[in-house]
Image (cartoon, each protein chain N blue to C red):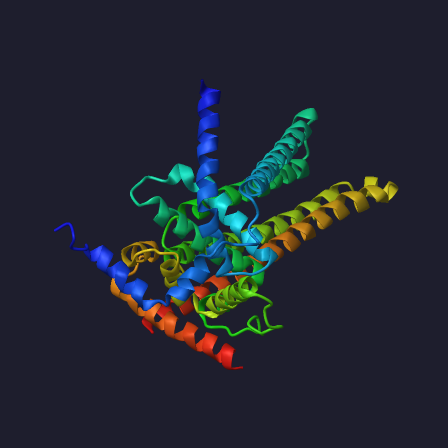
Length: 214
Length: 175
C-alpha cells in the first residue's frame, strides 16, 4: 500500500513525463537577474509606505476640504449658492472616496479567486461604476438647470448693484460656470476611462470563454 | 509584548515573501519582460502581503499565492499594455530573434532559458497558465484548484500548450 502512488502522485508523474525535462530545468534554473531578498523587501516596504502616505494624504485633503466648507457655512449667513456648492463638493468627495474604497475592497476579495472569476468580478464592478457615472451625468444636468435658473434670478434681483460693480457678476457667475464646466470635464474623462476599461475587460472575458470552448 | 508580536509577524511575512519570490518572478516572466517584470513581481508580492489576512487555510499557501500572482499579472498587463488581447490569444512576437552565438555553456543555457520564457509568453493565457504551473512542479489537482477547472481540462490545456511551445521553439531553431 505504501508503494502504491496516490492518484495525485500518478498524475504528477504523468505530467512530469509529458513535459520535456529540459524545459523544467531551464524554467526553474536560478534567475541571474533576481535582486537579493533584502533589496526586494526594501522595495516592497517603500511601495507600501508610499501607498499608505498616498491614502493618508487623500483623506487629509478631503478632511481639510470638509472643514473649510463647514467653516464657510458657519462663518456668516450663507447664501444659497454657497450651500449648493458645499453640498456638491461633499457629494463629489464622498463618492470618490467611496468608489476608491469599494474598488480596493473588491480587488482584494477577488484577488484570491480563480483568474476567470477575477476578470468577471472586475468586469461587473466596472459595469456598476460606469452606470453610477452615467447617473452622475443626469445629476450634473439637473445641477446645471438649477444653476441657470438661480443665476438668472440672482442677477435680476441684484441688477442695479451689478451695473455699478460689473466685476462682481463676472467673478461670481464666471466662477459658477468654470466650476460647472470643470465638473462636466471630470465626469466625461472618468466615463471615457471606465468605458475603455469595461470594453477591455469584456473583450478579455469573451476571449477567455472562447478559449475554454476550444 | 505587542511590539514583539508585531515584529515577529513582520519577520514571518518577510520570510514568506522571500521564500515565494522566485516562483513569483517566474509567473511575472510568463507575462512581461524587462523592467516591467520587476514591477509586476513587486506588485504580486505586495498583493500577497496585503491579502495575507484573508488567508483562511481552506486552500494551501501555494494555491493562494499562485492565484494572487496570476490575477495581479492579468490586471497589470490589462492596465499597462492596453492590449488585453495579448492575454487571451497566441501572439507571435520578434522576441525570439536569435543574436550572436553564445560564448560558453553557461551563456548557452541562459540563452535557451530566455528563448523558452519568451516562447511561453507568446502562448494564449488559458494554455500559458497551466503550463507554467506544471513547469513549476504543481500537480494537476493543484492547477485545477487554482484555475477552478477540471483536472481533465488541465491535461488538455497542457498538452496543447506543449505542442504549441514545441512548434514555436522548433520554428525558431530552423529559422
